[in-house]
Image (cartoon, rainbow, N blue to C red; front, side):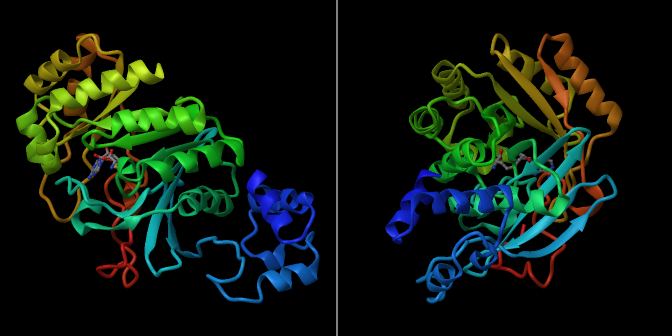
Amino acid sequence: MADLEQWAVAHGQQAFRGRQLHDWLYARGVRSLSDVSVLPKAWREQLQAAPPPAGDWIGRLPLLQSSCAADGTAKLLLGTADGLSLETVGIPSGDRLTVCVSSQVGCPMACRFCATGKGGLQRSLALHEIVDQVLSVREFMERRPSHVVFMGMGEPLLNIEAVLAAIACLCTDLGMAQRQITVSTVGVPRTLPTLAERALATLGRAQFTLAVSLHAPDQALREELIPTAHAYPIEELLEDCRHYVALTGRRVSFEYILLGGVNDQPRHAAALARLLRGFQSHVNLIPYNPIEEEDFQRPSPAAVEAFRLALAERHIAVSVRASRGLDRDAACGQLRRGFSPLNAPGSGAG
Ligand code: SAH
């Protein structure tokens, strides 16, 4: 709001013009200055006289394509100004509408089970490109999103400033609460303290949920699944998580993908419980969603339940994440397909 007021004044207008524009951008979701009829027409024309990037324009991303799954999950493909495309998913569930946002186009982390990781990184997303995903889901589903999870394409801890700026914008401009927001990371060395410190500095507090993709109870198996873990020993990752909890006062949750026969055996559950003993945390089990490039197996519902029970019996807080949007490739780790020719190599689709 303050930025828009300043911007209006810098353009020879009164500050309230900035407040009006704020209302039309965030409450009404306008996509073009031409549509902001509350502003003087002559001024709007003057602003738009020069074409982007020289003039002033609303940098909304066009919706290139959409698909809806039988369970109501909607996947949107948005286009960037430089010709890339990114995906965002709206997941309705009762009163909730969760938006799964991308923080990068593609991802450099190359986790073996993840479709996004197969294509490498195109680039990190800017603040407006992250917020746009939430506005686009709101527009498409004609509902106010209640929750945002940074679990789409990309590694948020490689784009900390834009992610935090987006959280600030979602809270101040769209009226969300930090507690409705989750940032998921596979872990990047030396970035968790930065995330905590920068969150406290820029947001005043860090109340969003940090979810860490653990996926294995020991270093050797973790490295097999997540090659980048080689540079980040699991003990160090957990130490950083404890430090994060101390800095922010917030619990951490751990994501654990279940890959049939690989990390879902009773001994893995026992080792995971030992690893997390005494750590105020929550484990979220994610049954693997098959991707084309790998032949991991999705475990049976009975195997998932057995793993959950083995943790619960050892007093680990644990839940199983419901798979949504499976029939439309909107499930975790699958944001990379189904949009040809738009997802030709290099376009960065999903
Ligand atoms: N880069 C971040 C956030 C994006 S992925 C991270 O790794 O946490 C969000 C979650 O989906 C992660 O826990 C990730 O490991 C998981 N995931 C990736 N591919 C998957 C797949 N094929 N099936 C199930 N979960 C998957």
